[in-house]
Image 1 (cartoon, rainbow, N blue to C red):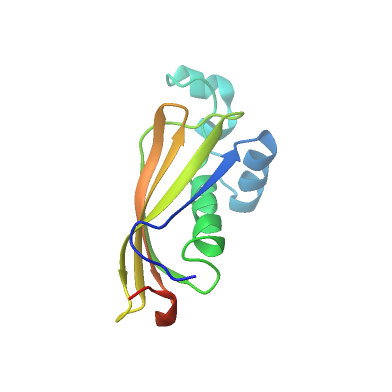
Image 2 (spheres, rainbow, N blue to C red):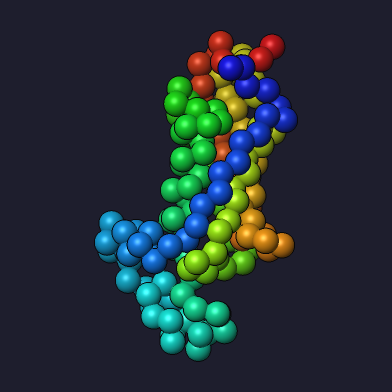
Length: 136
């Protein structure tokens, strides 16, 4: 596979209670906005909201297995959280190659995480890949 601007990959994931529990156990983050339904509702949300790290983990899956894939190495990510994602909701992460330099072995992407008609997060990625994996 050769990588070129316009290439894209997408991945759907569901925010389950088990995923929330696993992330809490792994990270040690017990912030009430992610763990206490009544607290989250008192702050104007429909319930507890997704850990941002779960969305970054989904981004890691796409970047590491799909685009640019297993031979790439991430060097920079930026994410802007726009709307909350709630337990039980299914989201889609779509990554598109915005720039690819064969000379530098550099691939830059832009991504968007959506749930129904809501934009949950947007951002950018930058990865180093073997130069022979980038289209001329």
